[in-house]
Image 1 (cartoon, one colour):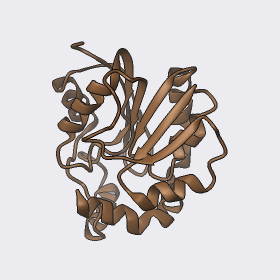
Image 2: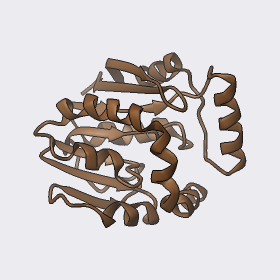
Image 3: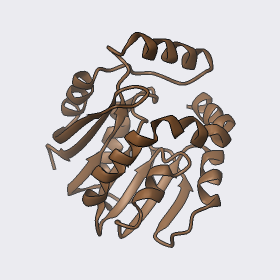
Length: 204
């Protein structure tokens, strides 16, 4: 995991500029998330510079937004203007929160870049309330267009940590195989297909 932290630490200052090309897809995603988090206590993993948290915080009761990268969290804190939003450095595989602490957990564009995503899902299962919701939007690179494959190739050359290449269908199957019922899914058009998934626990 250390090489992942180093990559994100080095690129924290450029992250928001890099994501601007997908602004329209992210606006659609914010609109999907806001009704789910309305009045809820939320945990976000892999928040990066806090793009999602800052755009949905007005709907939520409180958001704990976390990332493994110290530099990403430093960027996120710079323009945080909400008392309902708290940023901290945390390891998604070993979270400090008690069991069943959160109404909603968000992990966006992270499960494909960590080496053991099933372990992250197990930790999410632990901290999410039994009637809670997991929101897990993820870029699904496999089966992508030729231009998308070229972009993915150059991102890999630049050191971008990509561990899982799923199609949208494969990704949803992966979630189901790891203890989640997918109650809603939408594929958003972005640089790579962005598969938005809302899930509930299949075992409580």
